[in-house]
Length: 309
Image (cartoon, rainbow, N blue to C red; front, side):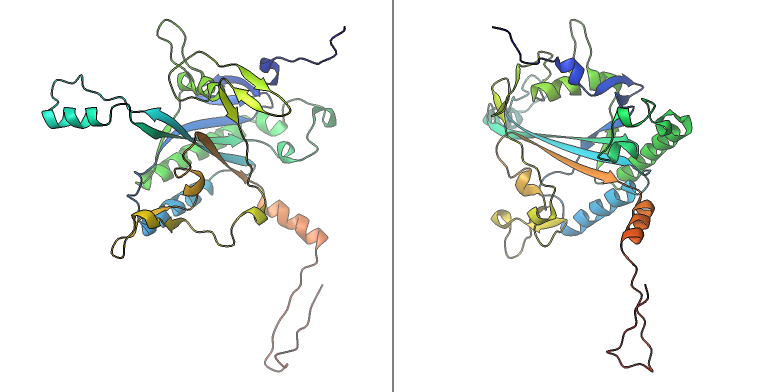
């Protein structure tokens, strides 16, 4: 019997083309810069400090050019604690403390941030190489555009680090792709394919089916929050954690803690922010919807309003 199933390799579907000078280049010529993020310790941030962190993120995002993508990935993986008792200067109490938590399960957290410069064509639904006469967008081929984006990324990093709450460390090419040899280390790409933060260069079997997706022994389940109807009516930077709060003390957690640290299973939380051209969008809205201008005069009754189209 003839096999009519279409087979394709993972390499042909892989969107990344190369990693050069610490920048990830996709097959569509998008440029991405990655960072390792160090967040404040859990239960140590007050409500005012959460507001300051939010303001720092907002200020940093505003320096990025139009058609940029901000991707924040939080990994929560269950691991067992391995004590470090080989140090010579450990006291009896320190050694006992380490052994007390030996092999105790905990939820390990790692955070990564990716800043991507794309083009207007890539954000449109009709994006296709058949619709244009060139493969690489003209905007990306301009060296000045790329240089301005890298300068904006550097300014973004300085603003976040100067806040004093969050620390960004830029990922090198070896940290992204890994190193080879007898003492090779796993890169972020290999960890992504194996869904593990461990330093292993052995990839797991990947099964993609209509009913489930499996990576090794892990079965994946994907949930998307993109509609406004799926979000609560009120959104704030933080919320009160009642289990550890009292009448005299207030324990605060981030607003998204319910899908982050409070979710006990292995999971990855991806947050995407698309920076569009607001001026261009406003012009498009003005073409489709008339602008209503209302004015009030003391000589006219308060219930009277004139509209101009």
